[in-house]
Image (tube, rainbow, N blue to C red; front, side, top):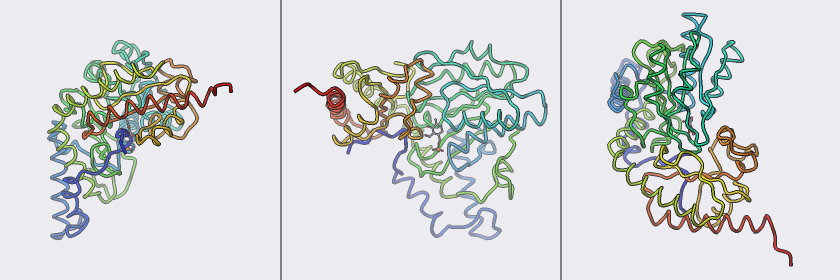
Length: 388
Ligand code: PLP
């Protein structure tokens, strides 16, 4: 099987399993316990926090461990907006882009539904890019927060986060970015990006599902969503997932060390793959920006097919990929991300996303490109049977 669905999830790396194993077995303590087992767990958690902070170029106290990317996004969007509104009730608007992951979009809609916020949606161009000037024109004296993703999970488009964050900063508005897809492929130095909050998820990086991190800058107030014993400096109560934190910090450290070389190598393979598909598959349309895109994502529409049928054919041919994001898979509705790009619903339904793991090879992608040609051809033949 050729696995081209790494944006959905990745297997746990051996080094990560080995690093977390002690905290699932002999060193199983609760970090809040005042005995040696507890202290060992607390030390491991502190080590994991420092390791994440090193990659983010921030202080350890600015790192909050969560149950994943979704929770980190929820905590950022709801937690920051609600804390700001509590301090100043006139702050009742949030800005998000038109292509956010549901973890951000639905958090903003919750603020709208339950807390009376207005949600200002920053449109994207045909390639999925927002405009910096567009953001400037949406900011008002009532804007509590801006949340714009670093890289899109369906089309791989990478936003100009540093420039966007600078505009928000000029207006004194905190800026959050969902870096779940970017981490491991693009730098996540929060100072260089100039962001106030940034979310990542462990399972996209070779750590287990159910581990995530939210960075929040300095004294930026965050209203907790999970109340209890006050762990994670009161931002996220609940006994900490020590093994998960160790796993995530190990995966992040490893991928950070490999990032520059890996991204260059995989970008090159991606370009060859995109070139092959566009030249071999008649009518294939690349979605997302041609150059401002994740090294690991190649996404297309194949008019005259259905994305789900192409997926099934590809799986028969030994290639596993996705018809969009994992969250939207199985749903008949065309992807809101593709609709936001101005793609017609009937074309959006023909979307297929190929996303590469760090281990992807040239030979695999060559085989996959040939399989795409065969699969699309078969689906089109089935859709328009020849008269006999
Ligand atoms: N944000 C983006 C851009 C994602 O792609 C995902 C997962 O696919 C998430 C957030 C949610 O992360 P998690 O699966 O860890 O909850």
